[in-house]
Image 1 (cartoon, one colour):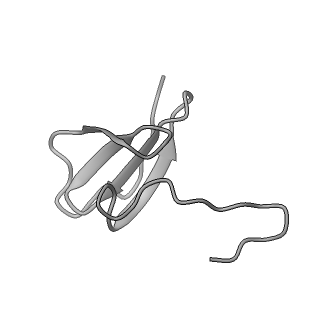
Image 2 (cartoon, rainbow, N blue to C red; image 1 turned 90 degrees about the horizontal axis):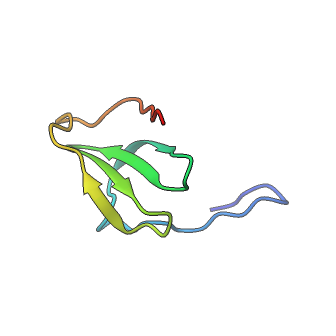
Amino acid sequence: LQVPEGFEASLVAGHETANDIHCMTTVPDGRIVVSGRGYVRLLAADGKKLLDFAGAPKDGAMGLFWEK
């Protein structure tokens, strides 16, 4: 993975925690929300799984928005 000068990329969650991600957003406290086939998952800032949301779309969400 190459990023422009002045930017940095780092692995937050591996494929065993968040595989085949369709979309991602962050919440104000630094947690990450990701969606893939059959899941919408809240992750800690260090990538550890915190919560799977019930009723996640079979094919994954195509957009995420976190309020408050």
